[in-house]
Image (cartoon, rainbow over the protein chains, first blue to last red):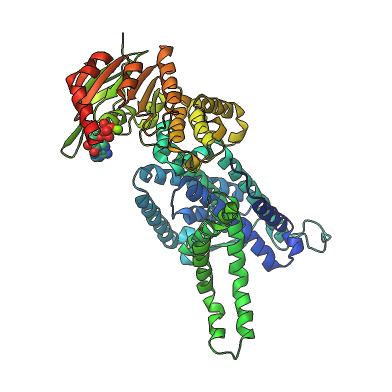
Length: 343
Length: 252
Ligand SMILES: Nc1ncnc2c1ncn2[C@@H]1O[C@H](COP(=O)(O)OP(=O)(O)O)[C@@H](O)[C@H]1O
Ligand SMILES: [Mg+2]
């Protein structure tokens, strides 16, 4: 197989080091929460890449499986079953359910045309959104669910009496490293997956499905399995998100905005590499968090100049992100990864 | 003796056109049958019906006496129906070696392994390399398929079928578009398979000298119908083949 470009490897290592030491390099509640989000979206975007980049499946139901995981732990925790056993049961249960639902959708609709499959996933995702808002007793409806975390994850918890390198060893720190290591394990497992004989078949299917069939690979089995695995991983990412926010609602997990973000990450990073979407996740999450304040600063600095301050008004940040996206797709159609490969 | 492969009244219609029309043929172990006929006669379609890329409108396909008419293509491939395509049909962005390695992997049935890196299965890689040596493509193993010449892509197509180690080999104009010096590599391979005596070979080929040299038997398709079946020398000399191929030459 093609070796990864050294610059990519370097970027990936840099990202890893930054995330591994994030609470110490970038102390503060907000930056640690941002680092958590980067970890979570790396998992989510990479799992989507298994579908889009490795298998050529265009699904819009990925956030639904993310939501499965988030609600999967939120529901027991909000019901008062606060403990690690609840988290574990919620995680395993929602991952299994996500895998089963994803496999069912795949089995029922991957045989048909690809466009039709994409539309079915969109319909199922919308249906899930409606369910989440309607089943008020279980999901909290529009308001969502707020809940307490197991003691070790609460801000008041002290792992050690003394700070480590000036950082308090509290429940937030424990939560961050839980997220970090789970994300790391998921990413490593996905790397193994795409390099395995199974992963190679996925790439073959993406390249030439007809030929893969003629060699004896039942593509429906492979695509269904890939969908199930990607969904289960997305559910795990959802669990981490719920634990980070201590809140789950339709807009934070199920909305189309989350889906758009995932697509942005995969496209900006370059699909079919896992590394690309991981880098894309970092870029998009950071843009979300820091583009707005940056624009506010620009807005203030340009006060008095005609027109310009309005252009960089923080409310326009989505416009700029959109512009950035269009420019990237236009000039670097293969994303960060693809652009490095060509050199 | 039971035939390895048999078709009974095999038929497919595309709209009003009957592309393969009630073709009944049996193929035995150790034989090489050439299938000839003008362009559009239905030869490729006949192959597609046997290997499962197309579903028959009527009739049946039997492999070792078992009816496989409704079986999807991958399952037919696993049961030993090997196919090399007329229009080259490869994994374009993967390396030459990876194309063959995927075929070896399919043959070994290890596709549903999720954890061990494929690169560590050196046994599969070595076997893929051996097949590339067979078709004299080993020096291109690391190149992407798109960098290969047309003739080399045809050889790769053949290597992938060899790697499946099938019972039945279906070659669809394997030397079409190849340069003169490349042709013998492929023909020698086909001849070697035929001479092993335990395989069944179907060969679609236009060049009558090749047919005469390799085939034990020649069948002629014309407008989807079986119109001749017999010894190479007599079928090639027959009026129907002369007419069909003179027709082609006049057109070309
Ligand atoms: N999928 C298809 N749909 C419609 N017509 C087809 C299809 N495949 C083959 N045909 C038609 O069937 C006839 C036989 O084609 P083919 O088997 O490719 O001929 P040959 O291989 O003998 O040159 C042609 O007229 C072709 O146009
Ligand atoms: Mg043909």
